[in-house]
Length: 135
Image 1 (tube, rainbow, N blue to C red):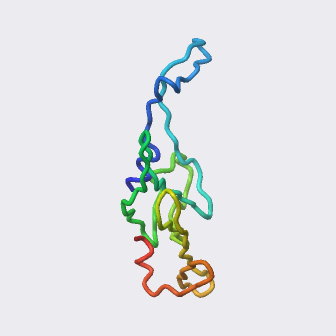
Image 2: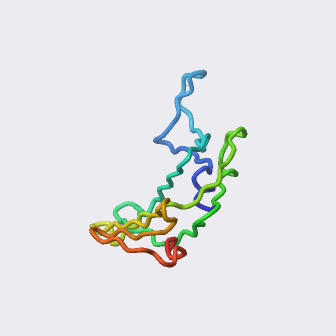
Image 3: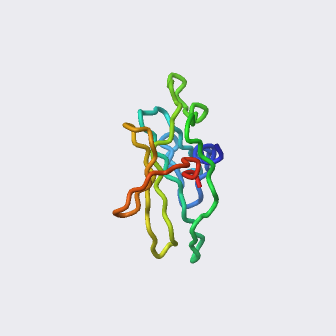
């Protein structure tokens, strides 16, 4: 919920990001916000997992609590006509390592047998406890 709220929080543009006003023909400080207007059958959420501050960069290691079933993004959709904004988790992509390198794995739900599988290079293994996915 915090990630979705943060995504649509209005942001005041800085001095180097001035907006050109076509009415007064001048550059002005402005506020922007990003909103979800419509949803589809599949929702992909990409979380920013790296932080940069001047010459320092690091991986963000905050755990994100994510429901396996019943994620309701309705409160974060700006279009009042949009319906059916509830999603179930079907895949997770994980990065292990740091900024200089690492390794990606995936956990995916098979819609035919309703089981979760862990993909790590050439190995695929069944996941017995799907609750571990959101770690």
